[in-house]
Length: 154
Image (cartoon, rainbow, N blue to C red):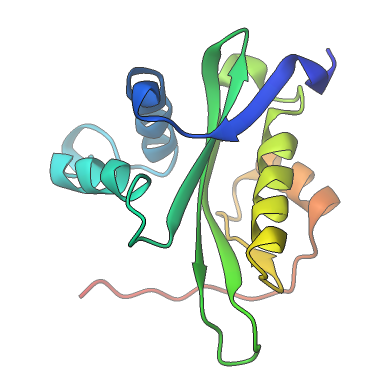
């Protein structure tokens, strides 16, 4: 199937009923479901941030025949090693039945274009080492720089 069948566009308030199952699926992929699910206020705040001009958080969705089938969330921020902002592609998820058809690629390219338009000098993201299917795509679209992510909850 051709990726021409998919439309990528900025998220709209009316997308919530289609966005929510994708968001829940994304979180489940990373082990955040049932007893470890995100608190509802986090999801609510995330959603509201997409529509606030005071927030650096943005979102695109991919449509297939008018139905939302993919999402990406990204944000702009300063960097100590660059003069221009950088873009962090934080979340990317597509409906399982449509994987491998170009939806993820289109969403990533939409973030590239948004970052370029905002004057960013780089787009980056991270994924789990076990995300083999995602990494096959990512290796085609960006360079893995070998960094290891450390994190500590506070």
